[in-house]
Every structure is written in C-alpha cells, then in structure tokens.
Amino acid sequence: MDGSSGAPAPRYRQAGPRQVAGSLDTVAEINQQCLDYLAGLGARGAGPFAGQEAAWAALSGTARARLAASPYLLVDAGFGDEACWRALVERNGEIVPAPRSAAFFTGAEASDFVRRVFMLGWHLAHANRQVARVVLGMSPAVAGLFGQLKLRDLDWLAQHAPDLVRLRWEHQPRVWQRLLRAAGHEDGEQLTHVSLRGLQLMAADALASLRRPATAGMTT
Image (cartoon, rainbow, N blue to C red; front, side, top):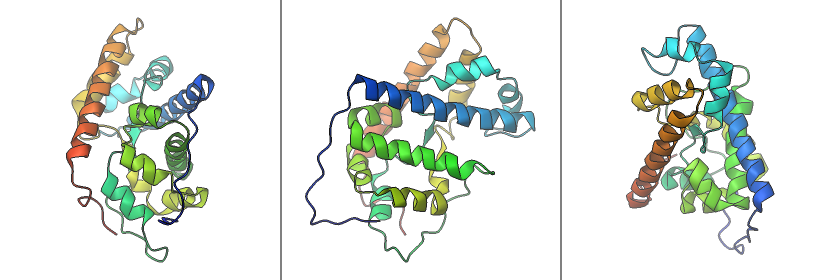
C-alpha cells in the first residue's frame, strides 16, 4: 500500500445530501447481505451465537429488511483501530500479515462482500468522514489512513485480510438478541429504541479507541 509521507495531504469534498443518502442505501444493502448470510446459517443449525440459531432461522425477510435499515453498518472492520490500519497502510508489499483469527464470513461470495465493506469505508473516508464516524464507527485517524489507500489496496485487503470484517458486537450476544427480537415487531418502535442503544455502544467504542495507545494493536 502506498503510505507516502512527502505527498501533500489530499483535499476532501464534503458530500451533499444526495451522496449521503446513496451511502446509507449502500449501508442497508451490505446489512441485508450480512443478515441473509446469518439467516442462512441459522437455517442450517449454525450461527454466530450458540442458542440463537432458531431466532436467526426464523428472521423473516421483512424483519431482515427492517434490521438492514439500521442507522449503522452491522459489520465492522476495525474502523476504530488506528494501530491495525497504520500497520496495514505502512506494510511492506512483500510481507503478508498472518491471519489474526479465522474469517467470520466464508463461502463463495465472501470475498466480494468483504471488498464491499472495505470499499464503503474507503468511499466515506474520502466523501464524508462525519458519516463514516456515525455509521461505521470510523475514527478520524483511521479515516486519514483509509484516505491513503488505492483501489488495488482494497483488492489486496479482501484477499489477505478478510478476517478484519466481522459482525459488529460479535462478543455481545445480548445486543443481537435484542436486535432480533425488536426486528420482529411491525411498529418499529422497539427497533428504533434498540438501534439508538447501538449508536450509544458505538460512541462508547469510539471513545475507548481514542484513549487506546496508537502503538497497541495488530502487527505484521
């Protein structure tokens, strides 16, 4: 990846309402893919959390659409982890970092899905960092690092670091239990309440990432 330090800082144009709406549509599309994938796992008796397989399998298409319209991306790619992304941006092109953990999303379409997540992060880092902060939990430092990436770097990431893309709150099954339950209600009031709680959790994560030393994190 090209982490040139002598080049002038790029100038970013603030996106207008139409571009923001388009970005949120993309968030919903990626969320829908994620939920379809997890519902499919549930139908096969698998899933991200033990004991929730039936709930995922029972998630209707309408409920999935409601949940997909959440005001944030339901997956994460370490968008708040400056150390991780600094290591990736400054990597030597001949060194491929060892996987940090098993990839969360697997299968025939996983690579395209993972690349779409990276592409969304790249796009918002260029077009609207405020939206990136809200819907992705992307810290300003990570947005600056993403701004240095080229499109070919996104291909590299999808191939060599797919494990970065994971389900948001993958270690908090109760959050997902509440989301699934709320998505099943037609009035949407419960889902709105739970979604606001999700934004609070993301804000707390963002605050924690600001306090985390930039040297702590993934190494190559």
